[in-house]
Length: 65
Image (cartoon, rainbow, N blue to C red; front, side, top):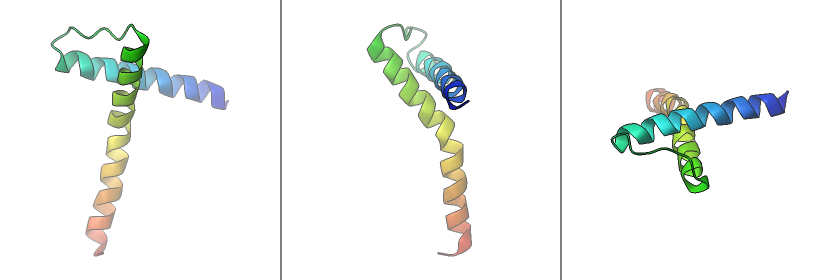
């Protein structure tokens, strides 16, 4: 089961990363090579993780610490 979820999350992160990098590069980014695949996966993972990090930061800011 973990293997299936890992594949799904990696595929989703890759597709999000390719979409974002394609937007930033004006449509020239393809994500075909291994290096580009890694960049797309890293960017997609950051985009997927950002809402959770923002929520945690908001909790800390509103808690009065």
